[in-house]
Image: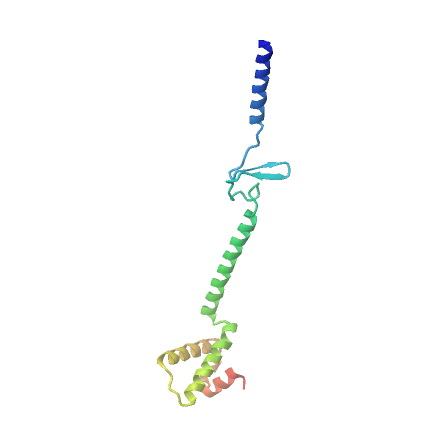
Length: 147
């Protein structure tokens, strides 16, 4: 009987050691694959793209990438408008200049800030339309307003 207990105990120890040794190896995220299924520990973290990782990591990466793209697009648009004046920006600025000049022609005196803004708008317009440098202000105003 003692021999049977010893053999049974040895078999049990060997089988437990085999079960522990057969445990799947986890990646640096704390996950492992069993066939096509991914299993992760409770404390698993993102950081293993293309490998087994917790649910939501891919969506989180996509969201962060979209934020970066939006930020870079916004920077590029702002940079493009500053350097070229931009066609899209021309209409509102032209309308502001027209509004400012309409106020000036109606007898209201422009403030220093309005005068400075008008000068900037004129510089932007003349930068895009160098042939307008020889025209009078009335001609430029008519060109901008479309009359």
